[in-house]
Length: 135
Image (tube, rainbow, N blue to C red; front, side, top):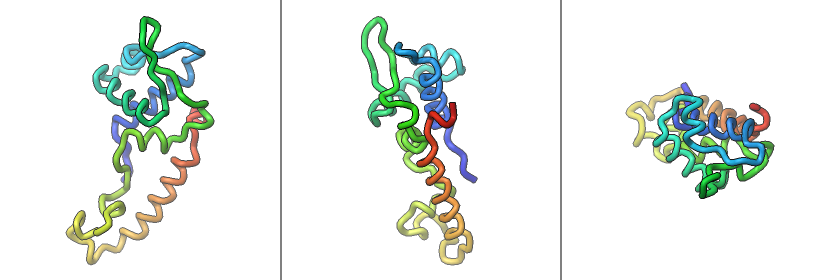
C-alpha cells in the first residue's frame, strides 16, 4: 500500500522541526541531520527542493540556514510531499494515462478504479492537513 519514501519523511521531519524550533532564527541542515540521524548530504538536497518550492527560504552567512517561508497553517502536507515526490500513488497504473503501459494485467484488473478512489481520499487528506495540525 501507500508508503511515503524516506525522503518525504525526512522533509516532513525537517519542516516540523523548523516549525517547533525556529523562533526567529535559522536552522541548519547539520542541526536537523544530527538530531534525527539523517545523512547531511541527502537532507541538504531535500532542503534545496523545499526552497525551490517556496516552502522554506535559505539564508547565507555565519548565522545562515533555513527558515519556513510561510506560517505553519499555510503549509500543507501535500506541498511538502509534492516538493520531494514525483508520484506518491498506491499503484503505478493510477497515475498512468495508459494503464496497459504500467501493468500487464490492466485489461482484467478489478482493483484499479477502487484504488483510484482511495488515492483521491489520500490526496484530499494531504491537501487539507497543515503542518500546524501535526505539531
